[in-house]
Length: 277
Length: 277
Image (cartoon, rainbow over all chains, first blue to last red; front, side):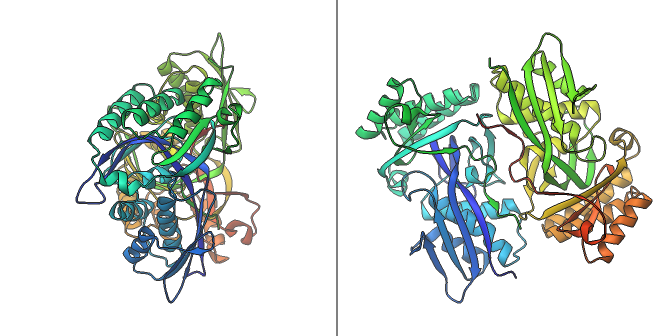
């Protein structure tokens, strides 16, 4: 058993999705597509007598993290440092769950494979109702397409072979749990249509146009998100809304060109990974 | 159509494998495990009137690269710059095929997904007889376990969640094509045994011990490879042989500690990726 271990998990913005609930949390998940970000969450795990979870120095309740530790049968202190806001559509809770799984496995020598650790984190997110597809996307990196839903033994992933720069502005939060707990029939129909279209032409331009159509058809656009997307497009750029947060993301310098003051990052090529020894 | 595009593909050392030929090159492949390396191959593709392939500035015949270009229906100049020797068990031919697929898709806007591009490169390697499992491993990064053989629609991958430093010494080449063309019954039985053991305990230590057992049982050890592995172990380190090359790899400072002058690198976290725009 080592003293501590650290993992980095990229942020993940979903552009569109369909919800696929199931009694088995490894089978449940979402289909859809998104971008993983070089901005993300660094998670350090060390053995402790009492479980404690901090996010940017503040103690937090984070059920998916507690669930992962419980599944591994360990008691630990988990310290997360995030470059991204919580609850604004960046997959921070999924990142904390997955980072905890990777780092705790290293510290406690739990002997799980990467797929097993991704599965633990995915199941924990599904059970907590905080996400359906972030964890498998964050494990993969790049611009992930969730072709079939669920943990690695059940789902299937592909990707858009492109690495644009990304800009984003977060206006505020939306509750993933509230949206997922509501009627998702319209949302899921819009998500399935978008995925079919993207798989026909897996490019950045198609991803963004289908994401915009999804946000509109699923009635998730807020006024200020819609206004920012329009501003970017009026300036000749391409943007859409993060699912689920009041967040706009653009490729290249789309938000800067439209007069916003965005955060800038890259597509994360790797997916979640232990820090090199 | 852009002027050119560049992809980086990590090197890949297989520690053990079993061969699973099939008439369909997308179904054919290998099971096994290995390490992807931060040392790798950078591939740049640009449109050209006549196809030409160079490796480190020298024109080369590289059938898998020609096959990938042909499958995409394009004519291009392909320039590969490798940090790794050809034919010594580092997956350089697979890297060239996969890098060509990713970069050519970007240059010619061929509109393929990442899985489709990995499939083209995998099929090209299988048809050329130069490899069975490097391409899918190089697409994934990390310490890939090939649980089921074949291209993404057929195979299944997992990984060892560890990121040790790697050292390697290449004494010379072995012909992958010659070994694969021979009787692979003994080799495949040894590879299946090793994979079962690794899946029981997916750790770096188990990977290396099973790799050594495989090299011995499959009768692939040469004298100088065996001597170097023994030297590393006598110095308290852990090492095995690259499949297929007269190459020894060790974790941490294993070869340095034993008095060798190795190349040093890290596990590549990302897998093959287009260079960021």
